[in-house]
Image (tube, rainbow, N blue to C red):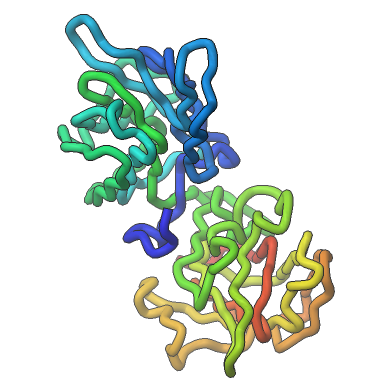
Length: 324
């Protein structure tokens, strides 16, 4: 999927590493239901077959010979507000569903039977294509039910949105950058080798591909990323992890911060950025802990600059929730 897609500033709520799982499908004879939320980009293997026929990288039901249609249920690992979908039919050409629709609900059950609400009506699909579909709804959901009409294969369902964590009664440090708490990377100068959204997922990176990495900079300047905090707060400790980055880690890092009313105001060229962490040397494949930070009070966004380029595996911003 292109890094320039229209929902790139939102979190992918379907990620299995957030705890999301497919709990039910009416049929997955040709391709397992779990693959519809696989984090990897779907592939096509020309000569790969299994006991059910041609192996396909996605969820695929058998040809329906009776009334009705197929569907699958996805339980989000973290409840979230949904702002968009990508129904991806990559590599499904003669076996994609002509139409799809999506329902959602908020439930404590593994696979709810009641309480479903329509979020996306019947939508025409094309084969071997991405279908980016915007949603205008501010409610929080725990489950997604994808309907396909009448049968066929979907390579991936990407669910874009945000996490709205409840910090009521929270006392002490909270990682205000973490996805599961509502933190989001919203913009960056470059993400040629690794997405900015890898910076705040749960757990340290598993390899060099599991971080934010820019192309080699051949001209002046440096690379940067902007992160919206889960909630405004006072940052008291920062961790910058260069795990697995050895010949390509940034030489130095600095972090600026600001208190903004919206993501749009937190633009890279804003005059309201203030230094939180002065320019500091980094080492390869190592966790770096910083507590000697400038006292800025409540902030809502940070801009991490790396010099001149390179890869960072993980960014943690521990602080206390502010007055907002």
